[in-house]
Length: 388
Image 1 (cartoon, rainbow, N blue to C red):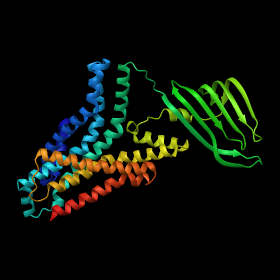
Image 2 (image 1 turned 60 degrees about the horizontal axis):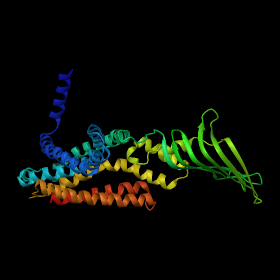
Image 3 (image 1 turned 180 degrees about the vertical axis):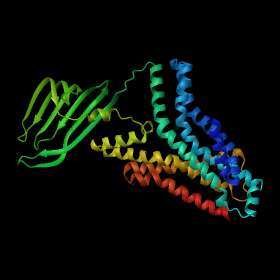
């Protein structure tokens, strides 16, 4: 069975044109070097120093620190893949250009566009790998790292937790004349949610026009059997159309409202800890809750789940086009420096457009994809320059 698989792989490789096999082989070495270099640098700055501080100040066991470091590794690999693609294509094609190997290819009629096809293939493969890591591996690994670190430091961990939970429900409001209109029906707020209990709960009810009812309770839990919220130790205040106020204290009170506040409380605060499917469900919940700003922010982050992998293709095109220019000579140190500058420019552009999308100045789709389209256009212009 294994021999059959190996033979199939060999036949598949042999079908790839010799030119492509040669150029892909030239790309692999600098690609692996760049992934290692960028990952070590980013991991050291982003996690390692903090873990060392926790070991010294909080007594974090070294074995746990190493475990957390390994769990956080995928999130930094995702960042490194795009940067490594840029550096690898730039270094590989610059070296081939400096050795006149690309000039020899031009002399036999191979165009610059044909030369960088292998680089684009590698970049697309890195884009796919980045998406898989970012959507499947990173969210689970980040959550496991957080739980492992908190448990080791003796901090309380709850699988269901949250703070400042706000849920608004829109529905039909009964008017005094018997008709109804659509509007804000209920507004739910809880100071904290932990282990299935909402604490510091306030509910505003506007279901009857002219009447405003406020329910304040020390705590509340979801009653699955009754499909209602069960409030404890609270008070109900009602403001009538005439301006009079009535109040009533209670020990327990059942209130008809969906379990949506629990689902909102369980949402991860960081979109990087969500898969695309989880983020889509979270956006739907936020839209139902009337939190338009947070839903819009999450919609931008969902699009960025796709544009982040596309950065590999962008950098592959730019790096190969720069390296394929005639008489291009770039050492590893120069390539690292150029890569850092180009990466900085790209991510500043991405951050700027992302902010415009979150604010609502641009539609989320346009805000997330504009940096990719602009950079691809820039890469196309560089390719034209290299073709001359």
